Structure formats: C-alpha cells, structure tokens
Image (cartoon, rainbow, N blue to C red; front, side, top):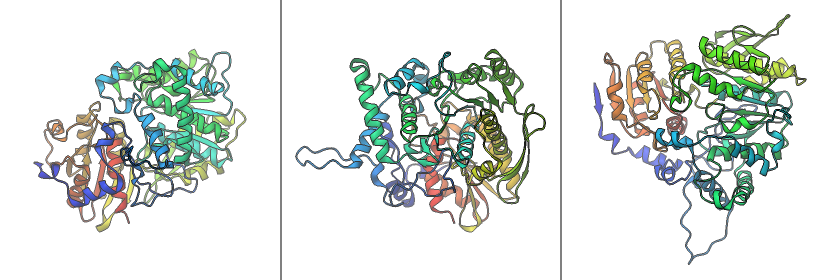
Length: 544
C-alpha cells in the first residue's frame, strides 16, 4: 500500500522549528551557500571521527545562526566587520567554485578531472615537498593515502586515531562532511576552528586569484571546490606542525586531487559499484581507477575481496614493484559480536611469527571489523618503515572511536532505537541490512529512504524491503542530485507487502516512521550522505 500524504507539502510545526534552529534551508545550497548546522558535542576520548560531528566552537546548540546566510550589506548603514563576516566570505569563495559533490550526472561527465592544476596550486602555496615525483617519492612526514568504494572514511579515522594514540600529531582529511565544512580538516581529532579556516582561505584565495587573473578570477575557472579543500587540508596540517597525515580519496583515485601527494602507504579498502558514470561500469574498471593511487615502490594494503578487482590491484602493485598486503592472504581477522554494540576482533598479520592483535571495535558490523583489520595492517606496514604503533595505541585509538552516520545508534523514547547510516550503494546497504538482521530481535523496522540520481535505488530498496516492515520515501533538500520520492515508488519490489509512504520533507518522514515503530521498534535513515546530514541532528536531539 502506498500512501502519498499532504505532509509532503505541509510540514509539522516541529519540522519548521527544527529548520529554523538548525539552518536547514534549501536556498543557501541552490545559491552556492553552505548548509550549516549547530554542532553536536559527542566526542570520543581522542575526538576521532570519520565524518565527524562539529566540535565545540562556542555555539549554543539552539542558537547556531552563524550558518545562515548573512544579511545583504546596506550601504546606508555601514557596520563593523566581524569574524563571522570573514567566515561567511571564506565559505562563499569555496562554494562558488565548481563542486562535483553538487553536480548532476550530465554536468559531472563534462567536468575535466586533471592533476596538473592541483600540483601547481600546491607549488604556489609552498607545499611542493608533499608532491609525488619519480625522483622524489618520500613524503616530508608519514602520509597514508586511502581509496575504496566502501570503508575508506572509517579506515582513515581508525588509522588517524591509532597514530594520535601513538604520540604523533596527526592530520586527517575526509569528505564529505555531515554538518560543517571544518569537519573535513582535523588535527588529533579536533576540527579546524572557524577562525583558522577563515585565515587559511584568505591566504589560499590570494594565491588562486594572483596565479592567473584571466583564468582564475571567475568562480567557474581555476581550481575546483575539492581541489581547494584538499589544498586547505595540507596547508592546515603544515601550519599545525603535523607529524603524520591521513588523506581519504574523494572520488576514484587516479585523477583525484589527493593523488598528487607522495604516500608512505597506499590503501585500497574495497571495490564495489558506485559512481559508474565516472569510474566505469564493472568492478575491474573501477579497480583500475582506484589502483591509480599506487606509486612506485610504495607498500600497498588491500582489503579488496572480489577476484577480478583483486587481480587488478595485484597486477598494478606488481607493475610498480610494490609490496602488497592482501586481506585473506597476508593478514586475516576474526570477529565476534558484542552483547550490545560493537565486536571483539582478532587480527593476524603477515610473516612468521605473525603479529596477533586482540582488540575491541566499538562500531557495529563485520564490515567495521574488516575496516579495523585493514587499519591495523596499515599501521603495521608503517611500523616496518620505522614508525612503530603499539598494540596499546591500537586499543586506545579504537576504544575512543565514533563514526557519526556509520550505522550510528540512538536510543529514543518508548524503547525505539534509531539508526542513521550514510549507506548509499549496494555494498554499504548490504552491511546495514546484515546488522539489522543481527540486532532486530523481532522488532518492527521502518526505513526512511532518500537517494541521489546516480545511485542504484532499485537495488537498495530491494535489500531494505527484505528486512523492514515500512518504507517512508523522502528526499534531501540541500543538493540538486536528489530523486523525487514519488519516482522511487515504481522501483519498489513487486512483491513488497509492507506499507509505503511518500513524504517529501525528511523531518516529517522521520516523525511518521517513528510513529510507525513506536513502541520498541527500529527507525532507520539511509540512502544518502545528504539525507543523513538533514535528519541526524533532529534524531540526536530526541535521543536519551
């Protein structure tokens, strides 16, 4: 049964109030302004998170209006410039650049990805020593470069947490962010402060505009949004005197902006079908793009399990004369589910005698244990370069880890559990469904689902309907790549016997799903990073 409710046109008061408080406005996105939320303050002991919550920037959770568009300047009423003005100006400069994250599929295909522009930008910023070249391939500090269809953000956070716990001041660059741009740039788990971001962007802006006034003065020319944020990350880490750096690839690998850097270890976490319009239509093609991060003589850690994709990784590593540590061959893991959340992990490394590590992974699912094993293998490989990371540092790094939006649980009233997950492809939704099967204990499940036009909605909905009682189809409002929820109805499995509702407002959709599973059920939000970002704070505000 499909219910198309008037709620998609008329929001509840609570949804309206939420958008007012947290700044969830569609307009700023459409006009190049960033979507900003009040920050949450749920920190781990080491403050490491893969796509993390905003840190404490001195905003009250209910008064975070600095993310709203600044009022238009009135020349008749001059006012003093404030730090917030500099921050808004910095964000405007970044968001008015070409931004693949907000491109439709057709426009993304027309955008030319290339590395020369990124290399030139780093040279102009005085960061040339981070660049890879065949004659100078050693980075100034240990640098871990991580690609993969699924798991790269979690592995990046885990590796960074372990390095911080071992005493190294560590910079972590991940994307996209959930709530604030600053989440992408972290030093020892702490997000870049807004005032620091403003200063960094000002220096970056001067370089960009000065480098070629004819080409770069227009927002549609010169470096893209992601190229600029990658440069910002390295500039922030350089000025913060970081002793180690972890870079997560944004898209693919071969032509990603991060791929100009010289790595100490190259990591490929997994290969799956995603972004086919850019990376290719089969796993071997996608593997070739992600294997593009492999450099001559640089050790490679691979968690790839598909045979065809694994062959591509192996042949590329062999071509570049790299030592390859392959999951299932050179290192292994075993996991056992904890009584509530998380798992015990036993890791066995390569060689004889093999390194054996027993630890606890506080994140849910076998896939997170796999990610932890890849992370441990990465720091073990780094140890063989003279940078040891002890078992105690592994334990400490993992123990304090949280990954917002990664099968993230919240306890709500009436015994309801909410799970927010950024899962947006077949593999990640499969991992989510496995967790729901293991944890549901006959509880009713309602799924709030919205996705992007370039994702396999039919496949994901087929997976989700197999484990749920109700589906509420919705959309996000902060990015033009959304699919209209009514267009998802025809791709539901023909044998689906549960209830389907169509509610365009994601907050109202969550309210309805919550009513469907109360008391004692499970509310799940998934399908997109953007949907997770637009609903997570509302759910968190109701957690107990």
